[in-house]
Image 1 (cartoon, helix red, strand yellow):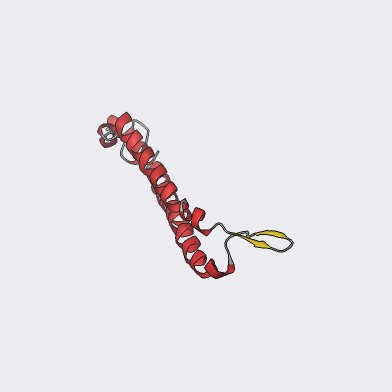
Image 2 (cartoon, rainbow, N blue to C red; image 1 turned 90 degrees about the vertical axis):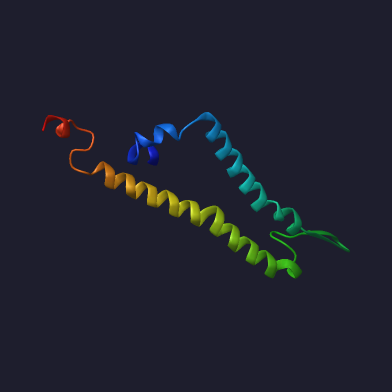
Amino acid sequence: RFLGICHPVRSLSWVSARRARLVSVAVWACVLSCQAPILYFSRTRDVKTGQICYDTTSPELFDDFLVYSSVVSVLMFALPFLVVMVCYGLMVRKLLEPGWGSNERDEG
């Protein structure tokens, strides 16, 4: 959307099926690499009465899990959210430019 609105002509050469696949693979690789440590942090403990399944991780690993979850929150939520907000702001600014999308420039 951002490229189509803010750089409509220039972006025509940037968009291709191959690049779309590469971006998709890169996004999935990032998500999988950020979520893989969850397998390490998942813990259960056997006790006399049964088994304890921890909600996040065991108490021994909780400090490490806190650092991990903070980094993942920034990388997987805050950073994409910031990019989307900046792009939408730039798109709104472009769409509000006088004469954008009309033939006023061509008539002069």
